[in-house]
Image 1: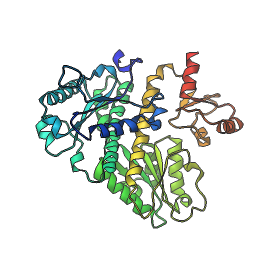
Image 2 (image 1 turned 180 degrees about the horizontal axis):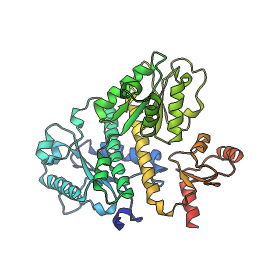
Image 3 (image 1 turned 30 degrees about the horizontal axis):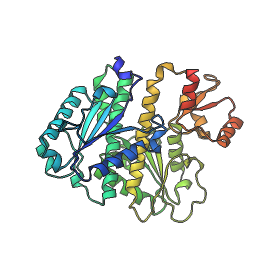
Image 4 (image 1 turned 120 degrees about the vertical axis):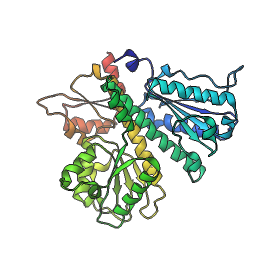
Length: 398
């Protein structure tokens, strides 16, 4: 692999947002993107400050266009261009965007321009072939449009990081890297069919996934080919998917729902719980904790986009974490096990046999576990050492 792919002095993912200074909503949209991708949700995965989000709008003195973007400043670069009528009417700005598109195309899939079509008339005038995010075709309030944009971008960023991760693992295999970029994120909809809400909510989420985000979903029996064993396919799909657990009244009482959650935890896949209990859960399943929980009224499905958006955030966080781990792979002791979220007691089930690794170290995203959680691990598994990423890196440095 070339030195440029794993240069430790530069970030592996940077986001730029560009908009014409005369676009009145540009700053508001850009600030919403910055606030989302630099907030605490991403800070613990991406080095303590969230993802780098850099603006390009105002031109420096003596220039008619913003500062150029140096693609060598990061391993992967996502450039979000808010394309409105004021931009396409400004020739220096059109040239600026076209030049960016040309350079990212030459640089490969690790650097992408994502045009956001604010108005239906702008794409033809911009003169670029890149597939645009069609803000102009979306409906809803300003807040809903922003949420949709953030979700769409999070999904595209997942594609970029999966491509980057494949290049880290197999630097000479360009076809595998392209396949990784084109592959859809698979969503597993875990739900109960034994109350009036589970299957109905799962259908609604599936329809929204297919309608808006280009995501692929697995809906248990409907997606299992004839002749294959039910439980074998279900287990495998859990292992390779991100999961939404639709927690309705009967969910915790169903064997296969419990199995699906346990498999998701054992394989550390991205997991979000949609809390749709309408009355009572007789025994809350203990392994549904330690993940984001979003309240969604079982008869009011207006929060589906919140559920999908948070799941996409969890998927993006997972790719960010896996990239960090892969970049440090050459320095990793075989006894170190990396988890993409804080450990819990079920995490012990995923550790290698004690005969292979008698004193494993679990490394997880910051911040460190609370004292009471750490003590519980010390009481039950005193041979296992728990370290946050920062603590582990400090130990490596010593």
